[in-house]
Amino acid sequence: MSDHAVLHVKGRVLVGPEDVRDELWCVDGRVTFDRPAAEAVTVEGWVLPGLVDAHCHVGLDRHGPVDEATSEKQALTDRDAGTLLIRDAGSPSDTRWIDEREDLPKIIRAGRHIARTRRYIRNYAHEIEPADLVAYVGREARRGDGWVKLVGDWIDREAGDLTACWPRAEVEAAIAEAHRLGARVTAHCFAEDSLRDLVEAGIDCIEHATGLTEDTIPLFAERGVAIVPTLVNIATFPHLADGGQEKFPRWSAHMRRLHERRYDTVRAAYDAGVPVFVGTDAGGSLAHGLVAEEVEELTKAGIPPIEALAATAWGARAWLGRPSLEEGAPADLVVYGEDPRADVRVLAAPRRVVVNGRVVG
Image (cartoon, rainbow, N blue to C red; front, top):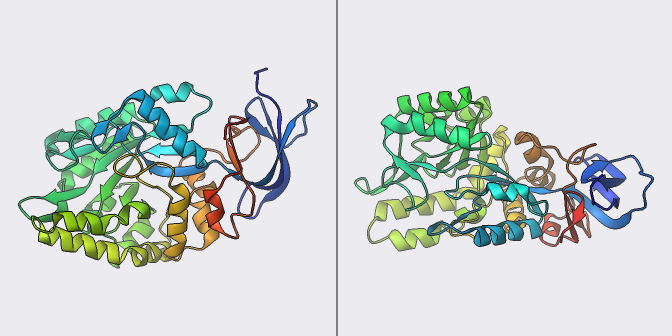
């Protein structure tokens, strides 16, 4: 037996969108629906599985890798916002030590970003040429937790706008290598040009996906390729465009167009059946702890509230291969004062945060 106290969680336990239980217990850090003999501490409210931020960077800030103290602060900020499962979509820092901490979120790592030479933010990525793409994807597939992160497009200084980073043949070979090693592949993509090649090459997910159009949305839906829109990040596009207006006017205008149609893009993808999940892009220039804001952004785009909740709760966990509130699962959950299905803004005010069966916030 561990030193975990038994925790009795009662009220309205949202095991699924419509599967509502009256109570559960946390015993030895695990969920059970069978009443234990031991005495328990009780917490009450509306209960969700720990929220998911499927695009988050622990160990990274706007300048590159950070020290362990900063990484810890980032993870604690996400945890206190109710984010208890993070897909770390690229980080140059070694954050494996977090796995030993029972009070911090669980992290699914995608290794370090893989970018074209001088085509990404300095100090973030392995910056390589196409001939090395397969080798680096294999390396990061072995280092990560079942994901690899590519930079699919970036500003091309000669073109003065966003262009695709990788030739089709190299992308196909690299994705095939990741899949051979049991990893899924995702890619940063703002623009339109790289999407068809990436999806037809077998990619599993696209980050941001602002460049989706009526031509590519059906392809995503047909192939089951997920998107993580990171709308709280896309909100910064006008500011970025202003900063680049003088040097790269074509790029600036493009970024403004992508921003202006962002909600329509996400809603069109959702309506077509493209899987949509919550991610904030925290850790670069964005603050951590924004998961509630991103869920609200999805509803502004027209996604029904229950589906926006699923995109950070039950659906996101299933997509990442991690359990929700089921018998024997790690007891990671968040307690709210009101029903988040009625108003997703409730997510911004957790009453209690429970990690591995312990109340931590």
